[in-house]
Length: 207
Length: 218
Image: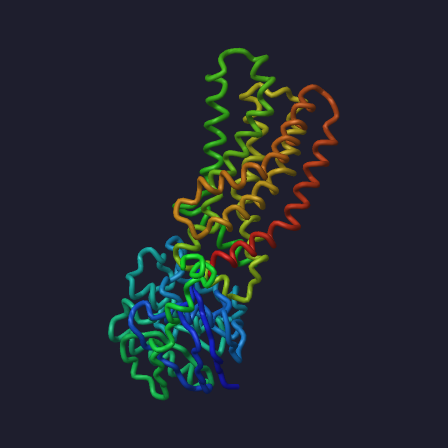
């Protein structure tokens, strides 16, 4: 099944950020979101993940099919790597954590507490959760922040493996991941114009 | 769900958790009040039920802002909200974890601390029963307050203002039950009314908390 969005409008808080955005994504493909800071990449991804319902338009997939990885790592300093993986595996109903460990080279870190990890190691642990969700569509927000070049290659390989398995990914990133089968989408043109985010009633009152 | 409960309990007990916070406050209050009131056992016995209940309530209030704030700051809450767990379930589990780390220890500590305050022995069972029945309501209502203020920095003060009026019925019935117990009267009626409030809040508040969280995640 293809993943499509039709004339989607997304808001952050009360402010409309993105309007009239449509895309089409086939299984096995990745969509790279481009755009300057503040152009609405995060807003779009949060909308697709179901954290903010769209203001208008529709998507062909439910938020339950989307695995979301945010800016923030969402890790607890007091827990060990193993406990963290087990926790998320139980939350998402995954039977084993081995795929996450091998995919992101976490083996040597298993018994460490999260607060002893470096920023890049935390990032890897955070991204490994994607494998545990078992969901087909990954929505990734700047996934390569604080990863070194080797870890970036490792991450690209994990995404490639996910795509090869029939999954799809929507990735907001500024660097080239070297993915084959990736489409680019510049979201700057879909920025909601100033007209749509002002209050029509307030405008009348001010005139 | 059980995984979430276990995680919350682990986090509360490990370094930096809020496990001892409410209990320590309760302990300090009950130790200091006799010094503040002065050496008058009769006065102390009279005010003991009220002091114990107000102390338990404030101790509960102290740790409310931790329920969602920490998870919201490090992004865990967003991830939990996109997980297969229903938000209503998440808020219920959070309230249960808060009760297990705050309400339950307070209930257990109340009997020995009652001795410090010269609480009449016949009141102790009523006090403990009242706390056992009433503190779950405090946790569930508190979770709702925490859900409302989750996006705010330093929302603790606002939580207190929002939640305190909702705590009043529980406080009134709880203190009344303990007072009647101290006078050797039957305190079943206030206890039953309080149990009704607790049952009602447990049934309804998780939905309100989940709705508040949904609003704040936008």
